[in-house]
Amino acid sequence: MQTAENILNVTLLEPRQKHPTIFARFDDLAGGGSLTIHNDHDPKPLYYQLLGERGDIFTWEYLEQGPESWKVKITKRVPGANSETLGQIAAKDLRKAEVFKKYGLDFCCGGKKTVKEACEEKGLDADLVEQELQQANKSFNSRPIPYNEWPLDFLADYIVNTHHSYTRKSLPEIRNYAAKVARVHGGRHPELLPIQQLVEAINAEMSAHMIKEENILFPYIKQLAASKANGQPLKAAPFGSVKSPIAMMEQEHEAAGGHMDNIRTLSIGYTLPEDACASYSLLFRMLEEFEADLHLHVHLENNILFPKALDTEKNLRQQS
Image (cartoon, rainbow, N blue to C red; front, side, top):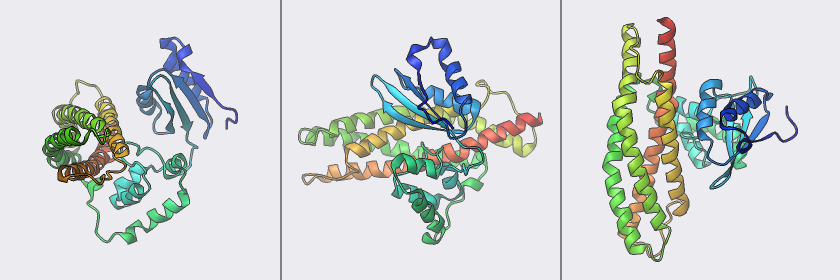
């Protein structure tokens, strides 16, 4: 394991040398070793390339996030260690997501971290969180919806009919109230203006995002399900592997999740000021409901639908 700090300033490299150099340095890491890269822009595309080519064998931690400098610590997981991630745990039993919510652990966009890794980043007692996860089955009486058992095509249709439908219905109302409340109360509460801007950004991004899922990604995923069920050869996709659109959708999920995190921070956890009117109260309640729905929406895709689609495509291609 590396004991000295392992740093790579990517800005000093020629563009064509950047990713090959980072990959070489990463490959040289022992289990538990880390590489910190410095860059002049967000290196998120590197994350998806590394995940696609090396697999889920590392953690990605931002030490600095712009606007002029980015620092990311990439740590290679120890082989053989318990590598079940937050997303995988929530996929098996969504009741355990309540524990993650309690401690502010992101199981959807940030669901590729283990409990230990996520707790270390937040300075939490991992043993305490693990104990609460073990008690989760006893603490919640209702049986969770078995999303993880549903076929790909059924789950894709459920996401569209439930979460896409909710998003399209709720966002126009949220936009109207965000604009109204910012106009009336923005002078006394300046945080309402950036909240309105973030709402507009979410609306624009999610509207385009859902269209791409419904017209491109989900139809192909349903083809995967049909080929698996009927034993038929898989038709070639214009984008090659499903890995490409999935990576794009995950990036867009992270952007929307980041906007909601900023709204929660700006609103101090949707805390109403003393002079809040009924519209102010309604806006914050709708935003909190939207955030909860978005977390489940992204969880179903990132942690269940997408991994199953990748596995199904891989198996079908091996059989052909």
